[in-house]
Length: 289
Image (cartoon, rainbow, N blue to C red; front, side, top):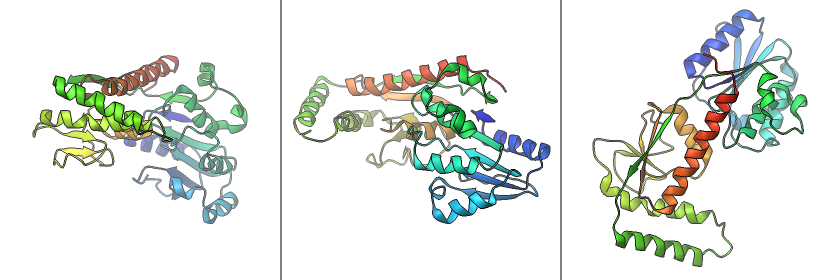
């Protein structure tokens, strides 16, 4: 079974219900989450992302996992590469038993095609070599709880001199690019315009930025484990990092400080389109509580 959008307590409930209704000898939890699950009197073992491919686990688990074991795949969609070694090793474990629970907060990292990673966890042979189609959502037992999110832009006024400085910086970055990845230009510009936003940071509010360059107590980074929804100074470069942030914060409001300069508009539009793709997935899926 695949569950999308569940909070931690809801996952625990589904796990407990499964153990009550099935004769399970041992639970193997493969998870990037650090909190433990309660399996009652049933023995359990937890593996992190990095453990899955290690020899000291791999061969032992192939011998130990049998049809009376339950495998819980918890927030393990970490890369868009369906052939990633960690996924492939997990498939070997899953082949040993029909009992599996697959938990993922968002149905994809970037695009709807990423959902095939979860379908592979459910039934790898069925989806091998196939591209994603909406009809696949009807082929498996998939329960979807919609993640409600709002997005707003908080304008930051800038001067004509600052705007000119931005475009000069852009020209310099292009001139110095050489053989470097062109993606470094918007990354660097997005961080660069953060200095124009600093005067709009107020002590009574919490903000989040890519790094700790602001040296302010109320500005956290995405690596910070805060569960409080913060005002966005700059988006992280990797979508998975922002998804991880969204999974853990409340309320589900994304407020972005934007200078209106092209690089801020680019990141804002990228996130807006991601939200549209997410909404399309929810529209296609059967929403359940």
